[in-house]
Image (cartoon, rainbow, N blue to C red; front, side, top):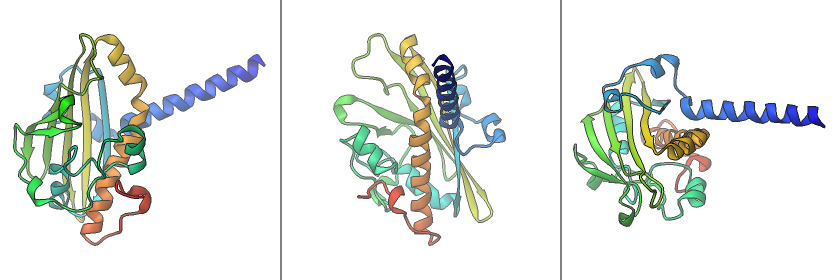
Length: 224
């Protein structure tokens, strides 16, 4: 019995470690993870760093319109619809088209990530069309946390590579008090689902619109 419990514990630990690693690195190469980005200095001593990447058939100009229109009750975040139904039931389905009125994003704009009463949003810190977008948040916190704080940066880097574009998404964050940082680290494996579905959602929409492919049912944020 002890041996079986020990083997089970080791297997569970290995699975958790693997899922956590995937949650921090899915899709990215070692070179991408080690690369210095212009926004790294915004959180110089991060407690958490993740790097996720995907290759999309098309060009940076094809991807850019989908990025700048993101946000709660804007275009959405392109994640799997079943995920949002389970975790974020107030979210509307993400759109499958480019929305002209959301294309004029500028530095200093707020991108909402929840109802207005939550005061949860990103601030656009840097935009370099069509290659760099930096979003900064100090408001993504649990409801009514005591003495809680967060400094969180999302960086999107788009690089044309012939007929493809490489999209890198990096997160750098500091959090406090210690229990919030511990919870964030412990749940890092969930980013394997969230970041992966987010980037895949962008990919299928871009490629559908440039005529490369169609949006698969399991990749549609707005699917049944």
